[in-house]
Amino acid sequence: HLKGKVALVTGSTSGIGLGIARVLAGEGADIVLNGFGDSAAIETLRAGLSEEFGVRVIFQAADISDAAACVAMIEMATGTLGAVDILVNNAGIQFTAEIEDFPIEKWNQVIAINLSGAFYTMRAALPGMKARGWGRIVNIASAHGLVASEHKAAYVAAKHGLLGLTKVAALECANAGVTANAVCPGWVLTPLVQQQIEARAKENRTSVSQETEALVAEKQPMHAFSSPESIGAAVAYLCSEGAKTVTGISLPVDGGWTAQ
Ligand code: NAD
Image (cartoon, rainbow, N blue to C red; front, side):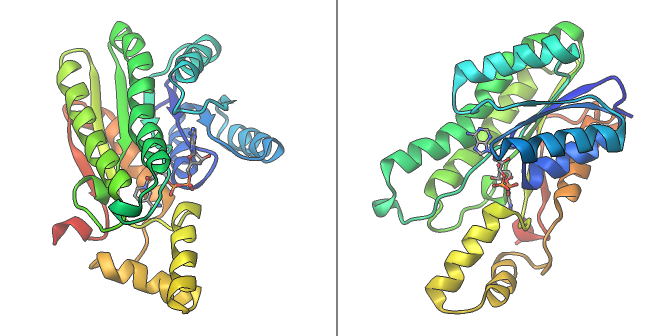
């Protein structure tokens, strides 16, 4: 149902972003991939996605913590594919430490990528969406946008902030045909989480498989990871015709984490 629409997904060379890009391509949207990684591997991914779903797919390497790079990416995408109709702010990083030990440069980097980056891309993409009278902003926050965990000061602050930013956009675009919503994943087994599991296994002198189970059981009543594609399905719903009056919400896909 997204044929003729162009979707830009930040941080889509890996993990959840790639899952979202795949689901939106499956719905017929043309795709702008973004993120870091080996350029040959990214080209294989780009060409594969285009062939599998019969849609146009381009790649933009912009660092989303750089405001000028975000403007250039939106301009390039609009020039090449005609528009940015759907903007999914997914790029994000994690860093864990107690507040008193949290390096200031890590705080600044997490806020820059997980919060300011979404502001830069929205600021650049909204004028086009409003002019065309149709647009979808979907910000990938987290269960940590709704509740906290220890050692994640910058991440929890950025994700709570992202929900606030999403609500402001929803109000400003309420009568412009543009919606703004957030999806709040619980645990999804991606490279970002794999790093945390490996760190825990080292610290607690346990195995990776033990820590994988413990990580999920600690937070989620449902002892199962969500898949990147299930986050993509939530994004596709928010982009659908049926969701055209859904705006300013946070949609948890979290195995019951935030029901507690
Ligand atoms: P990931 O590490 O697998 O992927 C992150 C992506 O962002 C990669 O493509 C990477 O290249 C890109 N990226 C990183 N910094 C960037 C920058 N400065 N500019 C452009 N791209 C950049 O992580 P993931 O687990 O797929 O996380 C994706 C999003 O989902 C993040 O916002 C994360 O906070 C959120 N999230 C993840 C989980 C989880 O359990 N994995 C849970 C809740 C929320």
